[in-house]
Length: 289
Image (cartoon, rainbow, N blue to C red; front, side, top):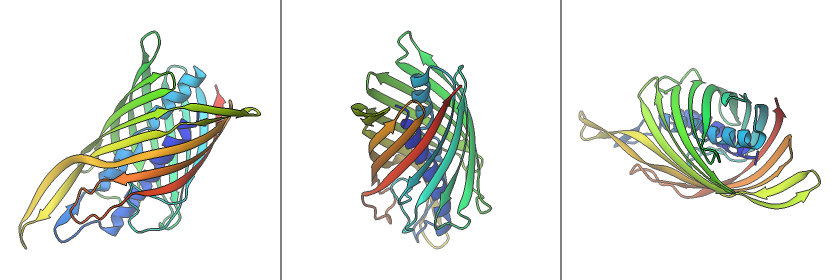
């Protein structure tokens, strides 16, 4: 269903700016310093390709898609950094009949100064495999224009994904490499299953629960003594997420209402994390080309 575009574009945008903004809060302690900067970018375009694949499969051709999404509470990988704020994320995607796509979007957060602090662009290509086209692969490049205090953040990203779809079941595995400062990498996976509930006029009401898991590289500097530090790198699960969406859509308009649950992983000793949840609303308009 076309509502995939809302859901995943929302994750991508809100995750990116919020993580960047949170860096200014200096997520460090007496014993550890984290380069969580790249965590944000790990999520930036993790599942945008999945959304493109879904829309392309529905339309069998090119399209132009504009959307805006709203989250009542901003989280990054299940972490809110004690800031109570909402987020908005407008985006625009173009895809041609050959499978090439272009993407641009920004993010707004109510308690960040400046509120508009991120703009991202991306380009990619995907291919369907086999006669039944159950399998597809993709590759993409993304660049992020960050704020003035973004020194040390990786603003370039190369990524690829593999997608498998069997009837209403969809499985996606994606990975990426971030560079421009201190290189980092990530791995994510998602599983979803769509159920059509009913039709209301020209709209179809569907429910498609989704499970999403993100693994990412983290660099840690541990203070051994006053003048001695030990630097290490770990690759671990950052967050698990369950989305419970209701989607109203027809051939051109999508309206998506979701409740999203976060289950972050305590990677650092000083982290005291618990599960959290928030509501997300998305609206989009699709124009076939």
